[in-house]
Length: 187
Image (tube, rainbow, N blue to C red; front, side, top):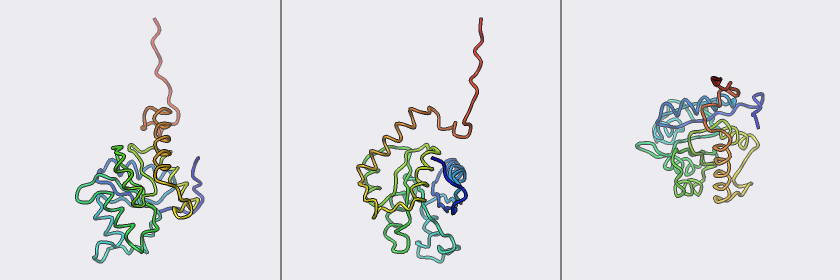
């Protein structure tokens, strides 16, 4: 699939309470030619986006975010609550939001998709997951134009996840496309 790095750079706000997951997301997004801003909580994301009711240190217009990727399970504010606030804002509701979780709970997935999430990704994220989302955004994906139902998106996500798990046993191999197999000692 591959992303064309010569095209306009997307700015992604990545929200995750886990430092390790933030670093993985940041790395995958940078490989996909994105500018990345990471924050550790939904509350901090709201501050950056100017939705916390206080004067933000960075004006949203200066931030110019094209996509928000958020973890579902975070303390204080879940990714679902963050999604609802973003989609409830007349200023930010058009920004695509992708929710991520290490748990594949269908009721959560359905709730997020019904609330307006662009996609729900199951962790650990793979480069193919990020490329697929970025490609969709670059092609101008718009829910109002596409009219893709929640059930169809869920089926697509499940098929993609099954394909990824069967085609590569470890998601840590994305950095090294080719690895030599260990030599087996011969008697």
